[in-house]
Image (cartoon, rainbow, N blue to C red; front, side):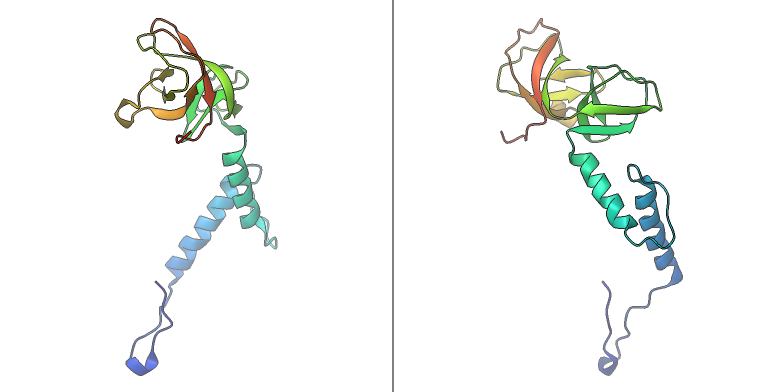
Length: 167
């Protein structure tokens, strides 16, 4: 915590060195450079950090999430990118710009050994690229609710993606 100090009590105020200022500058620059549709620092423009933060928030909360594909992706498949789950909109190759829908009802691959019950919470297993009916000890990510009950042998399930967990 920074302190103004207290000269009467002999307590010096916080002295910030060049290393602290350099680190802060690099954090701000990195945020601006990594923001969607930004990427370039412009001298004399004093709104770049705000613009970058707004763009990041918009991208994280938007129905459609845009990102650089870390691998070849197929339209209609579920995908977990960092901490964001969605359904790929169009087939793209590795390193190309990809879009995924983060809310809506989708038919997704499911684990063929588990029955699914309409209204139940469902989870994504990224390793198996499938919907599961359990959290898998924390290895599966909550993605929404099952829309239509399916027998264990079924290979797909209708899922309402993007619903809060407490629904």
